[in-house]
Length: 145
Image (cartoon, rainbow, N blue to C red; front, side):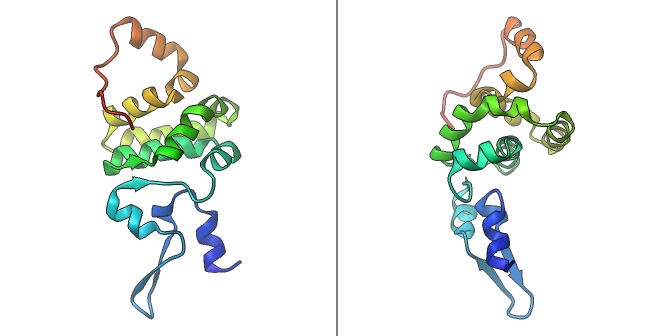
């Protein structure tokens, strides 16, 4: 396909950007520059559809938001909360690889907070969550994503 087709297949607008070496310019088919400048994680296409196509995208959204100190766009956040149970149908190896990346990225606490608030943690590690909550959990920030 074309470069534009490739951009539109990406998960999020901020990773749908390309650099044209010859022109020395960023090519943006998905309004990723605006989201990058505004600190927003936004899916390319309908968020719920995209998360149900590949539920690991929800963990990737958490990873990018925590690592970059960005906010998940409201529509994507709501779709993620609603679609969180779908993460259970993903191959364990794929989810585990993404969780390793998330936890090694230097934003473990923020990542866990977002996993917890989105409902993903309940489907990823229910036993850990039960133990965690029994010990008082962590003081989650009062702001919404």
